[in-house]
Length: 248
Figure 1 (cartoon, rainbow, N blue to C red):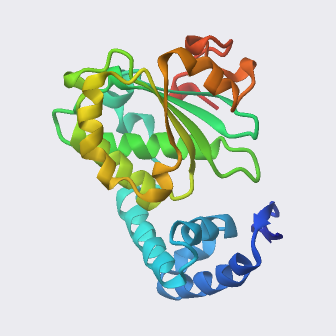
Figure 2: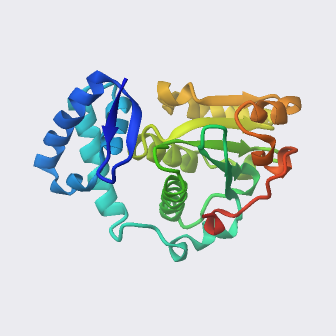
């Protein structure tokens, strides 16, 4: 294993020799077609490579699609609180604490999500807002986060398949290799009907990161990944919930 040095000087120690060879190839390809890619560090390049099993051609197509999307969907560079008032008012996403290897912890309450009557645009902006926020909170050298989907009380009124698929698409297509693990807890039986619709759209890499947790094993399962001081209090730990907009 060798290292990759970012433009800020951080070093990744888990980069293979093959990746070291292909990172400059992918960079050369995308910089020719999209000069703004010069601003991205080697971590970003490596994530897209890994998402496409180190296939430079497929990774470059994915990366160029991302750059085009980012330029069009987030023209100001970031999504502000004022861009997502309805979604934030649902008080459904929180972020606090880190697991044993430093990954930030994101918590989503499924029962608090309702389909936006004005369409998907604000929800998509909210997904970007959340993902940008959690990525910005990562310590140097860390690229992934841990998610906890709390589905206690989830019902058909929360069943927003189009919204779920949109969020999945954004995560997989534009934030590859960012999700470290997703714990789904307290999933009711009726949720599984929706899950069957969504599951075929989840790529194989993401599927391997999803864990359904038995109701009586939530705390013990979380303790395998994080210290008790970092387990949210709603799951028997000691960490208070912090709304995503207030998280650092």
